[in-house]
Length: 52
Ligand SMILES: [Zn+2]
Image (cartoon, rainbow, N blue to C red; front, side):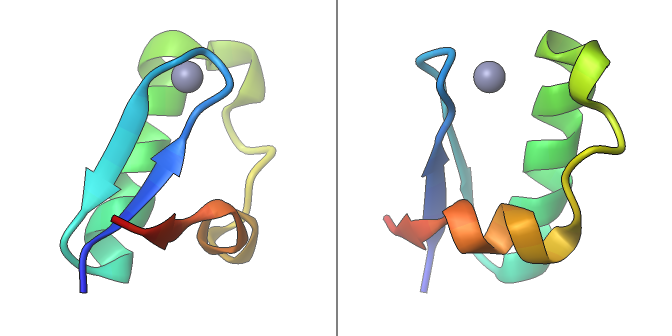
């Protein structure tokens, strides 16, 4: 089931699987929030996700 994260910056990150969502979120963080790189674990990212 696809999942998504509504980033506080207003963008929505989506992924078809947990792995896709985590890598898409990490890519978004490194692109838009470089100061947050490495501060979110996989578990924290998945905890922020909800069904798309
Ligand atoms: Zn963002």
